[in-house]
Image (cartoon, rainbow, N blue to C red; front, side):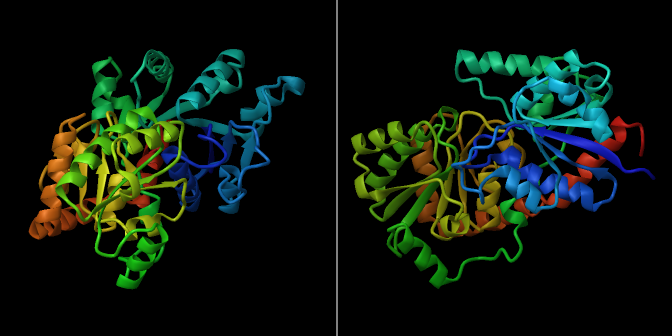
Length: 388
């Protein structure tokens, strides 16, 4: 490929206070693509600026700091043909949508402006589907409809690809590209020293000799942090030295605090809220527990595995594709608090098992590199454009 092609990366961020997995991946993918010298990757940011947001957490600011061109969509306006002419003005050959709302927006643009938006090739990355209520089921159904219009769909797990193939998607138009994990891509990442571990625990009010079981993520219903709290209550009865951290923010926080009080977790549980100090979180942690009902390729498990922390997770989504039960982590049935507590106790009581899971987990996490992700997406773009 001799010419530099332009790929418009379309995304709507979770909110201005934090970034989710899709946003963090794009902050690695776009600079990686530009560094290869094959594709330009300007970002179409489908969110209005929020002046009260922390500038250091704002996705647009972070993208610009990486040298990316960011085009914020200030408002849905047809004035002066600005929106209609955007792909042609920027010389866009491919539009790559990240997430459901970006999918819907571009789907609408292609109908309103078929001569500009409709002429660009269309690629979508699927990060996961949540269908725990009627609205989310309807939203997922709509996304599947928009995906049928894509020239290529990228999934982050084989399970997602199999779902699409089962719905009649063409096998040569759906590819699995494993994500490069942002936390593991940080330079200088290494195991914490005893002093760092002690300092991290002190900052969260945890004792040096505690066995800390941590859950991490956006506090939303599909993550099943209510189940995590129920498992914590069982673990507390069995393991007097156990302490717990719930890391993240979201709409379920008030409900979870009420539940924690009713379960008698009291001062054994720390709600950290939103934090960017993930190094401190992992330094303080002995076991990471994931209790979700649905997942694609959850970053938190791979971050923990790459940080030499054993993991317990529900056997859902794409998780069994990189964790074999008893080899890289322990897997339990979806929604089973007893099995979660049993698995935590096994890891607590068995240092040989802990060491085995740490070694296996580290080997798996090392495969989820930014370089592999960028190469995979680059290959999809080349295929879509008919170039090798």
